Length: 336
Image (tube, rainbow, N blue to C red; front, side, top):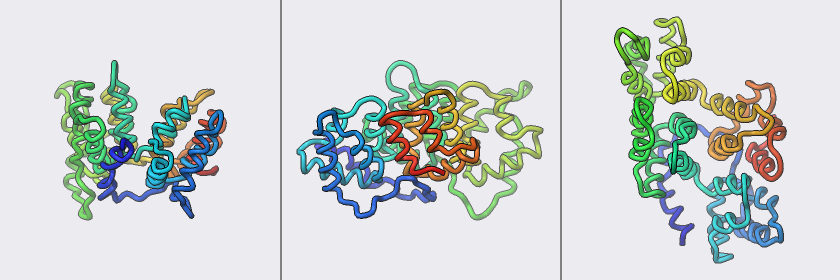
């Protein structure tokens, strides 16, 4: 069956992922997949569709629990749950719920595919995902991308980007970043920090060196490099990047530095920017809320409140509406 084959590739995922989790979506207590499947079946069959029940069930279960619900639904209704949800829902809510029916890795792989599919490339999505995920996460994304789309992620990225921007993305996707080491190599930190400029008019471009440093050094090492860099430059790393490179390469380097320094703050800033106007940029909000709700959304909430003075919950309430708002608030997991 379609549902079964889609999940077969997930058995080996999350192995070796050692980062601490700060999720807003946690396993439901007294979880009963058969009961949840029955509730969803009734909600889908209800005249006009009972969106509230679908939201209440699926946004309050983890991916592994949603997967059990999907199997229970398929046994019960003799139908694929994802197909049934596609038929029952529409618009922004459909996008959110179908996103939740994927694992975090499947979701990332699908978002990347969507960003390079068809005419034009959505560089913003590529930069956000590729530059914010760890090497182990990128390795898993590559595996799942191949399983889902029968194509190599590196080849697709190379075919839709160019220049130094493409070189940086490909270096990151190769997932060669060193693991954190208990021994601090101060000599190497100093050596990396002395690569003082990304671009020098007299000496030419030194982008290749920075791509190597940014894609291969461990995160703790890079944090120390950025600190040491201030000893050799009148600017900090982000200021240097803004002065010396432009376009998608600038955005990529900045995203990397922001994530190395404080990843939850990076996503909090993205959410604040997406909800700056009267109405939210739903694609950005959806992507961050769905992809981070089982990872670090609790920390993102804290950084958001610290940065903006308003809670993420309150901001979502003010900039969204309807069933989409209900789903986002549920994923948010409470007010601060």
